[in-house]
Length: 273
Image 1 (tube, rainbow, N blue to C red):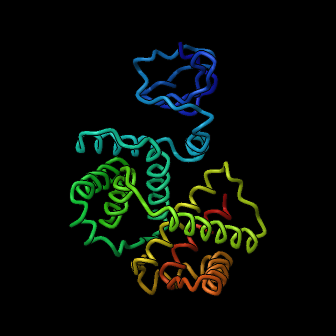
Image 2: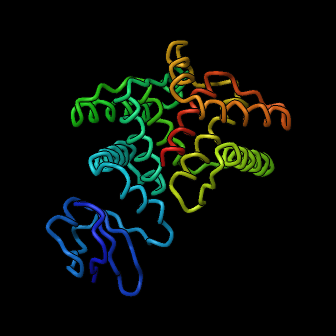
């Protein structure tokens, strides 16, 4: 029996399943419901143990419900096209990316994907899903989504597939990311809690930034956009530059200006909460 403890939105509720708190997702599971109401299990599409998915709860409480539903639509379409279930962790990262992309585009900030052509060739099926996704988002929000976003979405889907890696390199990269976060916290004079969704946002972006630098791939922004970001978010940009200088001194890892522009956006987002 699933009994409601908290309603997050029309399509997401926290329930008690026997003695365990869980997040129940499904079309209309929270619509016209109240605390202590029963949710019919057959109406639930996904069920997450709350203790293991607190970041999902935070995300559901912070972003527009429509953005969450768009991500659910994309995942559902991807699973149908790929003929397999996708790692459940994509729900957090894809939803966060889609919501962030929509808000960025509303402000006129368009981030180019330098790997667009490679993604088209290497991940054809995922890119086709990304193309469907940006068209779907545009139909639902009337916000024009650039083709670069199809590539970003394709990468999120691809990254959710299980694959091996070099443990030593993974540990080294994780250590560097941790130091980057510490430097950003010091620069801003704040502390990012590890159970906060903002922490995961920052960790994920810095991880990908390091990977791109190692592979000589970087985000590309035109000069006008980069200058606008540097001018509009001066505090965050200075923080990004200070962090990059210290990381270069310690590891000889060099972040180009375009990457610092994108990191600036994430730091500004962190500042704003």
